[in-house]
Figure 1: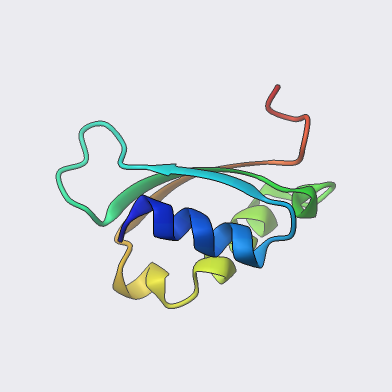
Figure 2: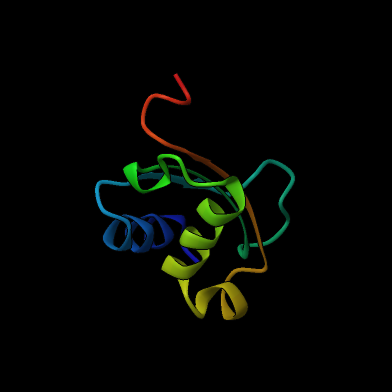
Length: 80
């Protein structure tokens, strides 16, 4: 799946989210992605639930188009 499409899905689903999606170094195919997502929705939310919000935003793509997703999530200001 195209990283730009993944960014768009995340940003359309999570209010005020900023997503950066790339193919990680060493990935040998198009369905391995790395994403960093900053969103107010992550404020005071446990890490596992933050990741679930991103997986929910990607829906069926997580089982059909994306084989692996390296994921970093932050509330605004946490990654500065």
